[in-house]
Length: 216
Image (cartoon, rainbow, N blue to C red; front, side, top):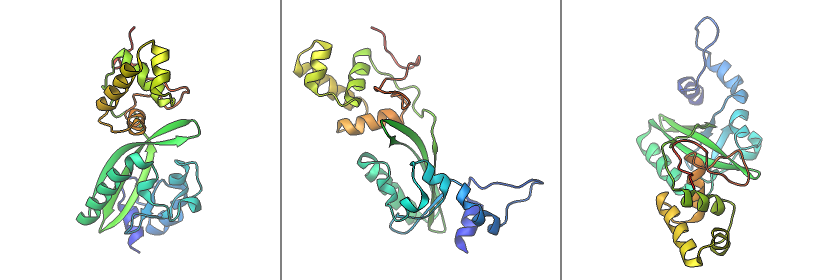
């Protein structure tokens, strides 16, 4: 079975005591404890392990048939679709992306790896460290980003910062430009994926790190 060999070749494959590689039967039997999912030719999830489903607070059967490129929200859909199409056309290779998924009021940053072997795509998702730890924000932009992430309007931001509405809108536009985003949703998603916003707290807060300027 081609999937058995793909699991054996996958970069997360394990070895057993004594240094011997697990057999294909062992791997398939143990798939429920692994963090992988097979994608069909339309990039829908087919065989989903419990470990993979757990990253989305779901059961494997809940994810079967779901479009992989839609798992992480509309801000990531086209990027992932393009990467999957490119990988599918090459037949072999891999890509890695850092994306965010919502868990209740919080967001979890995941490192997603998709690998192709002989045209068959296998995905894995793991909690991710901050991939852009050197990203810097000015103090005003950090405050604006936190409020945008909480869902504040430009009028509310203007009142909170004691500035005009036009100035507040300009600050929001500057934050979007810094993230290369065309919408507030996209900017916030990138901020979580890049480790600029702390996914473990609410209301949203910029990570307190030396690389992030928050003076004043």
